[in-house]
Length: 136
Image 1 (cartoon, rainbow, N blue to C red):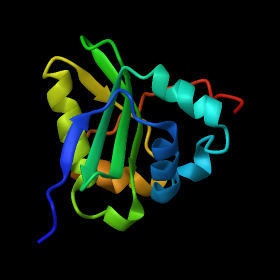
Image 2 (cartoon, one colour):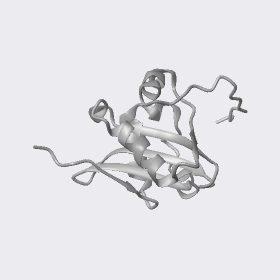
Image 3 (tube, rainbow, N blue to C red):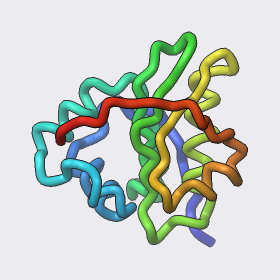
């Protein structure tokens, strides 16, 4: 019998662990994983970081920017490929929503490969979203 997955708010997540879960999830291909200072700033400036751990091992991270009142942008939902399909991503979404409360909208931009996951999780697609893409 394997240990339970523990979901928690973790504002002091180490940049090295964050980097590793980005790499393990596949998001490392589109995140600045070779820029440790930038990864640290991403963590330092996040308003909400939720982690999933089993026996202390980091399985996934939800990193958010929010006002805790109206809206929350979920910048990363990263789950190690070795644990994808076990409900970790859905658990991170559920815990993030619980911490935000029912009056805060949760918004994200999905990579094409994850669209089906978000649809199955009950999220609605937003056809009228816009953005100025960063240079890097």
